[in-house]
Length: 54
Image 1: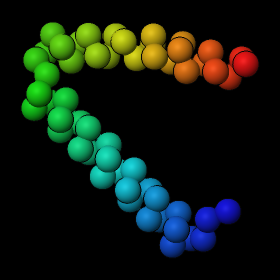
Image 2: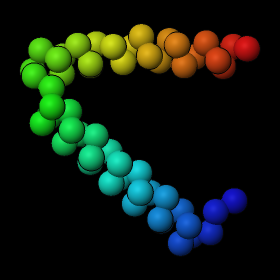
Image 3: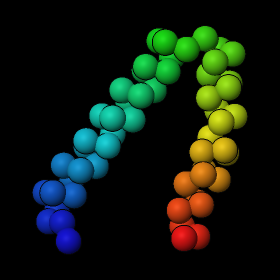
């Protein structure tokens, strides 16, 4: 169990990581590549769910 300060630090870190990823996608990927990435999310979720069934 995390303390309140620990939880706040974790949330802040996750926010910074999400901001970094958003910026990297915008800066590095073309609009077509961004669309491909968005479409691949469903496939990645299916793969991740496979581990839940084991």
